[in-house]
Amino acid sequence: MWGAASYLQIMASELSDKLLAEILELDAELTVTMHIQTVDQLKAIKTIKGKISDIGRMKAEEQKQENRKPEQGIKGRRKGEPEL
Image (cartoon, rainbow, N blue to C red; front, top):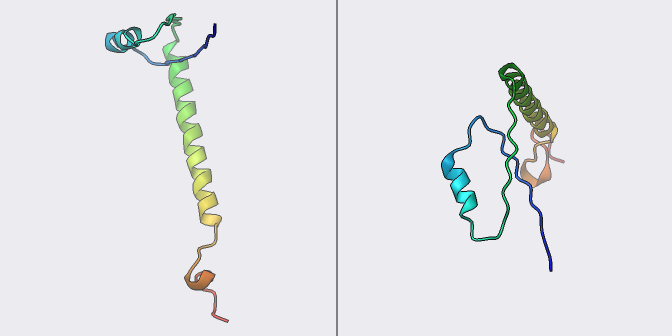
């Protein structure tokens, strides 16, 4: 006998009936439980703005790292570097 457990977290303002129906119609023996928690709208907005800000910071950091990499020209020379 064996078993497996999977965890799926959906954070959304709505859960469509179609999605729930598709999950329940899967050709597998499974138990579906739902834990629904209301969230204060102001707290939700603050959380989302924080996530968006985090993503922006990550993108900026990645761009900085890309800009720090030396560009390679012909024969492995850096652009603007004199030929020896």
